[in-house]
Image (tube, rainbow, N blue to C red):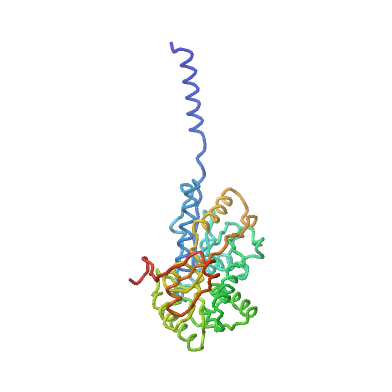
Length: 351
């Protein structure tokens, strides 16, 4: 005969095992991804998002199907393919959420939006000016949300002009509605009117934005008399895809002060100043919080979109010396990163 105490303990343990066996497993989710083409801020933002999801215990619960991940490329003929990829993603019923990286991918998805599958946009230059959202407080679309950093790009032109005092700012971009956002064209013109400098525009690069095209653009702007250049978010300034050093060297040789929209990598490698190091961990955390809340049942439109991260400034003293620029003491004191040498990224395309 089994002692009553042992029998009772056995039944309790058995009941616990049955309860554990009967408990449903945590649901898993399938996430799609779309980008116009490869770009370093897209890949780093996605990596930071996935790392944060892992940190919060969501990594094992999220699948990224290979047949729902698209990056057609930046060649002109790929534009139609991007639209087709967006339509395929929107037509699927097995995806719980779609990530859109960049303005072109976001526009493509919203053009064929099924109004059902949640869309989270990231690395979008200016969602309000792009018309993706109604305002900073309302996306206007129930299944859509995006990260917004208000005033970020206007501020960089103000900082650049206040310190350098240029009269003719060179601005280079591909002339389409979405591509103008990568050069912050509207913000540049607004600040130019307010502060009294001229914009020398070169909208002549193609959607592919090759090194040769950008070099031709820079040389044209130099011939037109630019005395400062804004380094935009173009593929030709992506170290993993193009010969960026050749472009920066031309600007340094002509003693042109530069401001890099995407900051530290370019400043460390030859731009005069720019936004300081992108904190991809903070960006990943912000986006992960939205993804988790959506997968838990929240409506994307109901989520706050504004990220109040304060931009920081980076400066390269070696570049300043080569182009004959003497930064003010107040500006030096306000910089968050100061480099005293030019060093190229280890992961650059051309060694």
